[in-house]
Length: 71
Image (cartoon, rainbow, N blue to C red; front, side):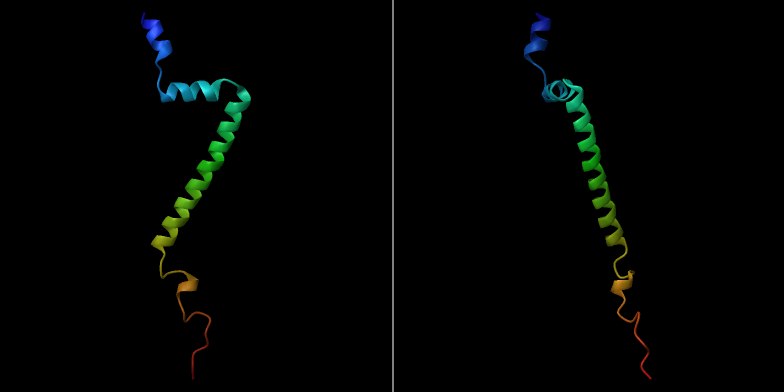
């Protein structure tokens, strides 16, 4: 009776595990796409954090750089 309940039940994670782990090619594709998406997310987050912390300190933000002093 307990094994019947386990077979019919199952949660979202168990179903996802069954779908992804059924074939090696699906698993490898999932890992590669996950790594690519994770890398993009981290890159975007670090870029936004860098921009927020360096407002007004970048070369483009300082208007007098590159100009000759007026005589």
